[in-house]
Amino acid sequence: MTASAARLTELVCPAVTAAGYDLEDLTVSAAGRRSVVRVVVDQDGGVTLDDVADVSRALGDALDAADLAEPGLLGPSYVLEVSSPGVDRPLTAPRHWRRGVGRLVTVTLTGGAEQTGRVLSADESAVVLDVDGTERVLPYAELVRGSVQVEFSRKGEPTPDEPATDEEEGA
Image (cartoon, rainbow, N blue to C red; front, side, top):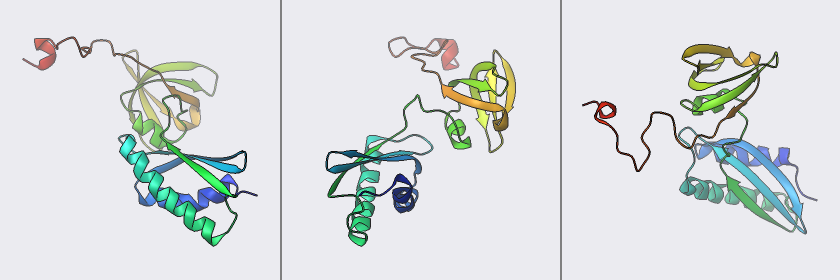
């Protein structure tokens, strides 16, 4: 029998936090005789492949120590998968909104209406969006759902193969 996600979360959260990351999700599933432990971590500024490798080592050590202390905790063997949240992750906590500053988002409000705007700022109580040139303060209590919209290029920004104009360079 393998440990529950809740039990493993208790065990790995201190290692994730000590490494400077937020534990966004942890799931455990069976894959034959193995357990697959999937961990999603994030931090301000994003997560690089090197960050994922560092967290993987720290979590592997924590899980190995837990398995020694509680034999059979993870079954006969386990596979650890560590990743960062995808762009399609719902924005559910103030830190998600803070990390989305500058991004285009769509929100569903408690009344069912949808708004699309760019995140200008976020604190512990509300997010501020630029909706068609108007700042709109939305308390989290009014938000049902929020998600980042994928933008391949922002209107008015030069593309990598297009040089900036003199006006954009401030000349």
